[in-house]
Length: 537
Image (cartoon, rainbow, N blue to C red; front, side, top):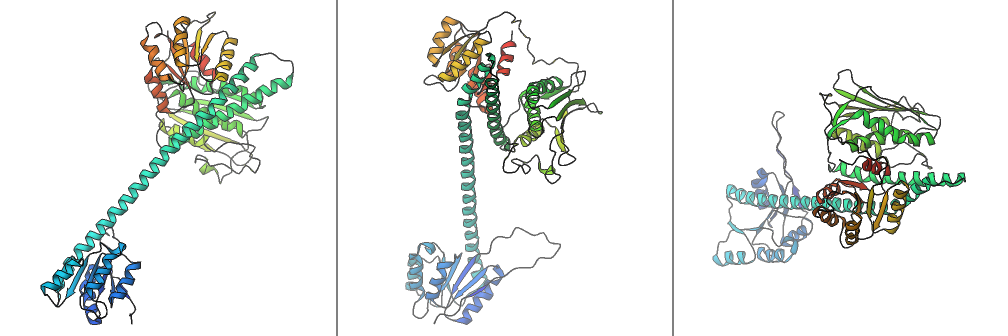
């Protein structure tokens, strides 16, 4: 009859003033002997090791315990009734789970034949009885440490595998988001171009003009959602790199606000802008600063109703070291419960089932992240629901404000000039709609649908500006740019990359290939026209 299994654990007490060392997980030690008094003596000897001592009174009971437990070492009596130690050891070795578990035989017989048989069945050691306590503890301690080391190594390997799997999943997610953005931007480009062309045509039917505005607004909204989603992902992984330069914050705030004025006017919302009389210079990334202010203006517009007022103000702090940008609205306000969390990603107030305010809850989180990258501070204030909100940004100013920013380029006198532009784009709808739009604005435009074809047209057309898609079949945009730079007749052209890929690394790759500018689809034509009007002399 198999007796009940006994499991004992031991712990050492620490004084209050002692430093607690990291506690390793206890391991199991199996002691198998048919004599209860021997089991008690082994337990007493091993007690100081502070591990779990599990006892069994027969080989059969030991095998059952091996089904549900892992053991650092097994102490096995040789002479037991029904099933002796050698038989038990042989069966232990046949089981996959316990095949490598160390076995130490305990016996009063030291016959060489018995010893040889013990090693043949897989024993790692052979201790004669009566046992010397110090020897037993020393040998068992070695196997405890080996077991703990193996387990720790296995856990580290598992953690490493999980981390590598997570990193691989993140990489694939980023690739997917980049590809998704590219695929979504491609059809948005021709739609936006078509809307721009329609804006330049005259039609007496007011419904026609309303439909043009709807298309333009929705394409702009979709583009913003795509950009915010990708930027929020990159920001969380620390992959946004700022291209800092010395820039006029007053000019950036003023221009960004003016770019949004038409949107506010169309919604019946008043926009008031207050700027200092002198420039305020900061060391920052102009594109990202525009994005920060644009996100705040977009947020203020989204949560304001017709008849509301949005106030944009830039001032120099009393300490003279920081500039303060504030965007204040008279909109729906922020619930005090939500206010501490407004900058958390995907955090939004309760909008109801209609979600009339829209959005992904990324804009403010992204703005905050970009402000921090500029060594600035950002805060939100609101008296409560229905009482509007105010967002303030503090940015460090450059100390010497009398210097002229070296990165600004001189504007060419293009009055009356008709620039020659070559557009290389394999998407027919995108190419044709872009050609129509640029032609209506007075540019001389020719198109090509392949990289090789574009180089051939460029030889005869001698364009001043080349707009080139990156994802061309056969010869891609990077190869086209490099070929242009290597051709003496074409190398002076201003080459602009057009692509659905807008990551920082994509822009760096475009620059390395020889592009002067990188535009993400769908094209922001305000940026394109500014670039065409401010080409470096």
